[in-house]
Image 1 (cartoon, one colour):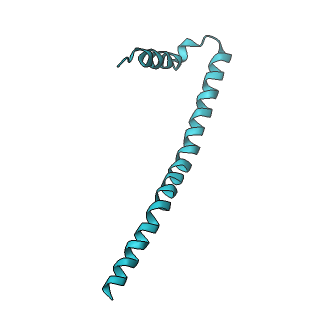
Image 2 (cartoon, one colour):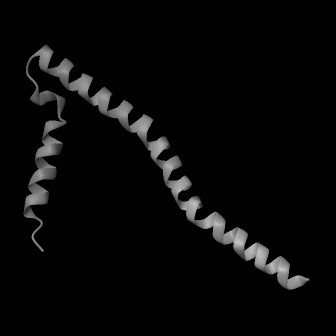
Image 3 (tube, one colour):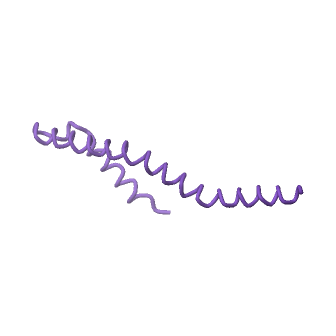
Length: 77
């Protein structure tokens, strides 16, 4: 398996997150602004995606639980 392209991408990405690479004050402010936007995006979307994931999972599980419970109750009588 060739990992060199991925390794190169990750190294370049890591180098872009070093604030000393940005020379002017304007470049540094833009860097900080986009990092703040990305951070807010993750903080907002992660809980919603987790909630959607649980709803999607339980949408399939709950009918099976109800069916098994009903089957169990009917077999008791």
